[in-house]
Image 1 (cartoon, rainbow, N blue to C red):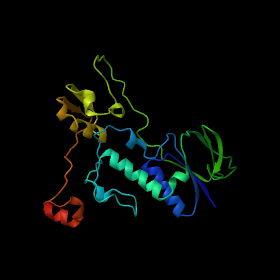
Image 2: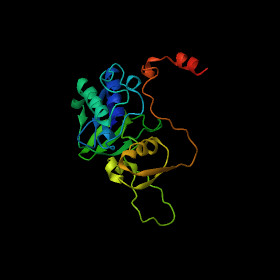
Image 3: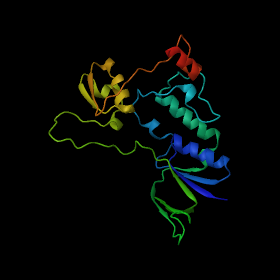
Image 4: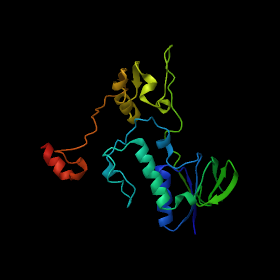
Length: 230
């Protein structure tokens, strides 16, 4: 039986666990923190899912019907945890364990990785795995640009933004128009702060539409939506 390693127990990590188990593989998961759910534990409090509830779900495990169409951070977190609990993933995850290196075993004339991958964690050598799936997330390491000049105000990376009160009454420049850049300014009008967005390329933003003719947009087929635009 092939043996696989999954790094990270966020949404992608637990999904990988389930797919590998269903395929009949032996699998282990290492999670640096003490919980399932990844960045949904640490993002700012006003965060909501940017895709609708009915089109964002693990296969065969829909989100609760009483969730709003764009669930809050705590609801998404609870959903991911319930998925992992339902499928027994907690028994496969080693928490508080950081993966510090993954290296290919000597394969002779064979391709790199064909002899397996040795995984070293903060607790020691975990042995050789046939494959390693890296699901450590793309938000764990803040990328802060080095901008020439001097700025005496407060500089805050989106990963450090916790709640709307952090910037109450401030005039804020948001650099970037990705998911965080677009969502963060929308949480601040109630605090009396003003925000301006700066982005390298032009883009179009639109508010989250919750319904069409009082029915969730997810109930409309793509073809009907195309007809409605003609």
